[in-house]
Length: 352
Image (cartoon, rainbow, N blue to C red; front, top):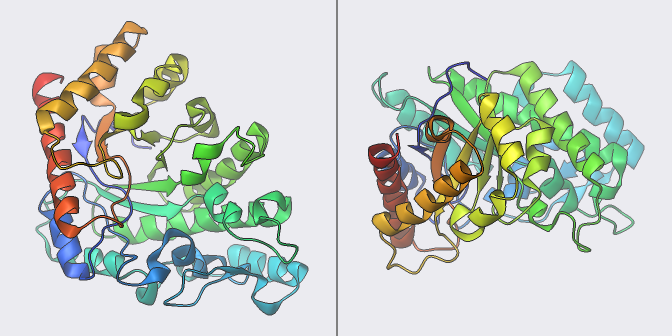
């Protein structure tokens, strides 16, 4: 992570947009989130742009997904042992290019690369990408025994390392555009951490996230974030080594106030909180930037009351929507992106 990583309420986005035209989706991002634009996943254009199938090719032959399908299947017709051996041969002996996104399953990514390449060199100081997190990916695929691959320790670790390599491949490609890069591991499944629905130990989560982060950092330079759109144990993500925590702060921000020491540790080591200050699933259309900034400001003041320094909270912060917007309308997504940029401006005006 760069020593001078001080995003100071830079605005960026999360995951999906509802568009079917990749160029239009990218244009909507680039014209609104000028400090740190992100490439959009477009599941309404192609179901294989959903987060799990989109990254299945990077994990071959452990996982397989066909273009045009949301279904992800394990082992590609091989035995479990054969699939593991073939995967690790790729990971340790092959090119990082084999972990890169495929054009047929990531139209928004390739439209984004083209648009940024054509932009002036001084445009867009940072770029943001994202990969599926190892908990979400391995939980979402069942093995031949109908049990989630999350509970097969060897396969889950291989998936984690493959996703780390996929993050590195993406970071290398984005860095080639001449900007520093942030990559988020998207982990909606961590919303269930500690519940009966996701029986997994803290140690196992730390190990899988750690394997992904280790693989990513060994292969490319990037700032690593974790996005979780529900409530979770936020200290877990700090302890795993994430540089940035991203939460739905409009819906769950009060929960982060329960972890002041973890947040302090994150900020003091140069990390940041990405505040999901603009609702997405709960978006009503009557939200205002001033009202959303007031909610975020209250959370920041709450952190100050817990002993966190104003200066750290101000410089080590980003602003995002609460989650992706793939199920909304294009007009709604544009309005949410506009609100995100406006909350960023208000935060800089009134808190920096």
